[in-house]
Image 1 (cartoon, one colour):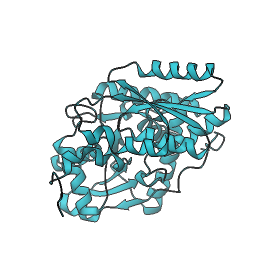
Image 2 (cartoon, rainbow, N blue to C red; image 1 turned 135 degrees about the vertical axis):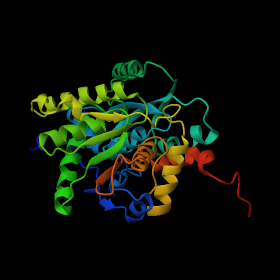
Image 3 (cartoon, one colour; image 1 turned 45 degrees about the vertical axis):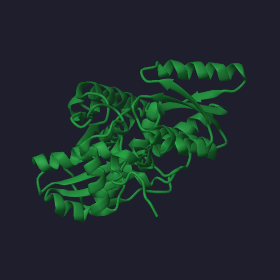
Length: 339
């Protein structure tokens, strides 16, 4: 099917690579592991939100907006990419950062993504964890309107039917790559949070009748809630595409919340090991909040025998390595280096 009738701007550098991970495959003695490199989308160090922003920024421009507003956690990858995309198209931006992690290090509050947000240039407002952040977005939009600026609200993670189109497009792209390489994966595994990536993938896969199983490793919500959120958005996305949402049965939506740990953005031993494992076998950097926990889930499932040596598995790397420096205390073996 075509999605070319939806407004879209160009942000991606091109088709992201699908790479085989031979060293990791040998080390885990499990399935053949491939990685879809959506960390390589190209916008301000890359990440999965760039795909969503191609459609969201286009919609903002089509509506005549001069200012975009969005929200996220202190170390939000989405916020970084949104500011960069707004800059590229001459839009002002305001970001509302929710302090979901209250006991982070100095690096957490001053380094990583938040440092890049400041370099990119934006208006930052901080709110405590648990705030009604959607109400804060609406209030900011109304304030800007009173000042004569038309604002466009982008939800957290870019996760609505417009943003999800980015991962409908990714599903089409990945299916083409799988056909070219003659791969038949047992699963496509990725970190799932605000639901837009998984919902878009599921909608795109359903639209093409590709029957590729998708497993989201939750980084925040428990299984039932995450699956509900993903299913609802996937159904809405299919309707937005002009398709019958019944083509996606509820049982196709699978999430695993066993790897969240103590909470969103809080490091786990599994995440730290997974980040180091991929870096030291394949030279690829994950992030500590999303892809690190998602990959930790994949590694643990392989070790449990969930996937066999006869399987092929694709991991979708959603980016975010820019946040690693905010978690320096969790990774560094040296408190300080001396010359």
